[in-house]
Every structure is written in C-alpha cells, then in structure tokens.
Length: 230
Image 1 (tube, rainbow, N blue to C red):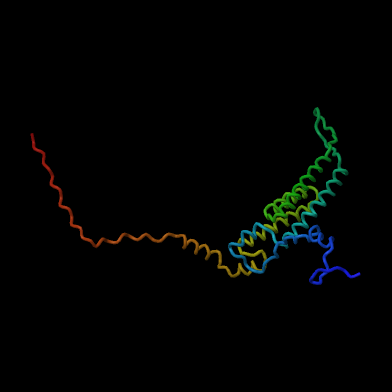
Image 2 (image 1 turned 135 degrees about the vertical axis):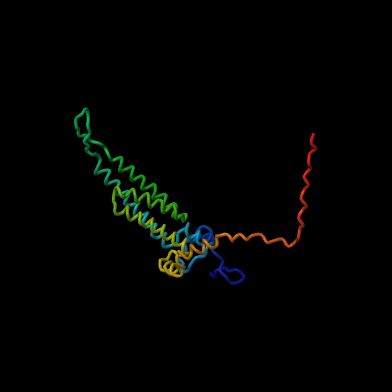
C-alpha cells in the first residue's frame, strides 16, 4: 500500500513528530561567565569585572563552598555525637566541684552558622556577587578554625585571593599576575606620580593687576570750612 504524501512529495508529519518540538523543547544554554581576558581592561570595564566573577573564580569558589558545606555537616554531626557533655570544675559554696555541662547544642549551632553562610555564598555565586562570596568565605573560615583549623585558613585564603584579584583589576586593569606585573613595570615611580598630581592640583601663581593706561587726574583737595567764632 503506497504511503500518502502531500503535493510536494514529502511525507506528512506524524502526531508525535508534531508535538515533540512543543513539549520536548531543548534546554536553554546556561550562561557561562567569560574566561579571564588576556588584555588590560578599560576604566569602564573594571567596575563590572571587580563586582562580578569570571569562570576561573566561579570554579574555585564553587569547590570551596561545596567542601565547606560537606565537611560542615560531617564534622558537626561527629562532634555533637562524640562530645555531648564536658566536665568543668566550678566553685560552689566555696568548694571546687566538678560539674557536667552539655555542649552538643554548641556544635549544632556552629554547624548551622556554617551552612547558612555557605547557602549565602551559593546564592551570591549564582548572582556573581564577589563581595558576598568573599564575606561568606571569611565567616565560614573563621567558624571552621574552631572545628578544623586547616580548612578554616584555606577558606580565608580563598576569600583573600578573590579580594586580591579585585584589587589588581582596580589598579592594573587585569587580574592576571603576569599582566599586572608588566603594567606595574611600565608605570612611573610612585614619587613621580605624586609630584605630577601635586603639580596638576597646585593653583597658578597670582599675578598682580596690570596698571591702567587710562590717565585719571587727581581730584583737587577740599577746602576746609572755618566756623565763625561767636
């Protein structure tokens, strides 16, 4: 049996083929931040680069936040179960007495703080907000110094690295260390830059007014009026 076709000789589309482009649309490509440019940014581009994050910074920030959130959950659960109480020596009625103090809630509170600021870091990372990502790294890093000091210092260094890259962009127009060093080598010394700024901001010397060429005769002196004596 010959298959039916339209006037142009093409086979008509089936119902499933007609509905598939409607219900099975391809996913929209996700916006990927641009890679680190190999050039010096202009003054108009620096502010956007300082406040945002590029692909390299997003990758390292995401890895740090995932590591902090995962280890925060694991270490908090371990410490809260292994160290439920603590024995302290207190003075009661003038005598030293050993007392048992529950501390499991302290570890849970610290873990909650870590998770909250990790969530803030993920939200800031999604919106490409450098300042909030750095703030979340500093808070989680200082929190981890009480639990696991090496990870805490690593998170603090990661936040400082993001700040250092923003400083390079502001001063040299690039976050690349090699390009920043080249820009620093081409710039004049700091003393010369200060002198140039001081010279530009110094007001011009005040010139005395020029003499008026127009001759104005002196006014005759006034005569004194003598009062009559009584």
